[in-house]
Image 1 (spheres, one colour):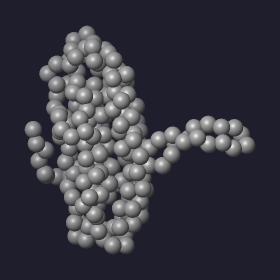
Image 2 (cartoon, helix red, strand yellow):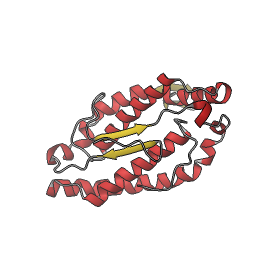
Image 3 (cartoon, one colour):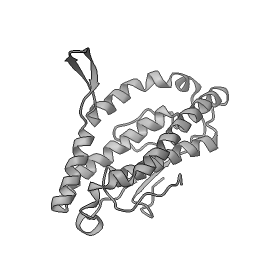
Image 4 (cartoon, rainbow, N blue to C red):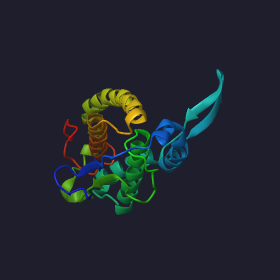
Length: 212
């Protein structure tokens, strides 16, 4: 199916599966490890070693996405421009990221592809920076989106619990309860809209508080 280019400039749909594999569902966390590592490498996150007076340990290091967010914000503020290749990179990385997330959340049995759309349909609308974006909003969008972060934190916890329920349901019936499926997809859709507004910076339209 195709996602129509209407309403909010960030849209997400995930096809509801008719039947899910009980075996791959049971081992899902283990099976997802390789693709999760690939996603972490693409996003530029990792672990680094540190040593100080208190001892040694691991710490999370920088992020390509964090650097791209800062660079995009500065580009909009000072040049009123949004380089197309930055947008394309964010688009493809978000598509892959949500495919990985859908696999982890048991929303699909298809192992995440780095290229094919599969059952995840995501659309981001490329902005005309001079026409569509306020050059000063990138400075405060992170603050304006704070209420969404709080709600999404609570919803993410809820998705964790519903995924556990769905895991048992799939093991016994082979089906993902439709209401729980729609809830998980809705939370991902909400999160994508907030990301489009405050992180990807592709729109100044404030994201709605909605799963739909």
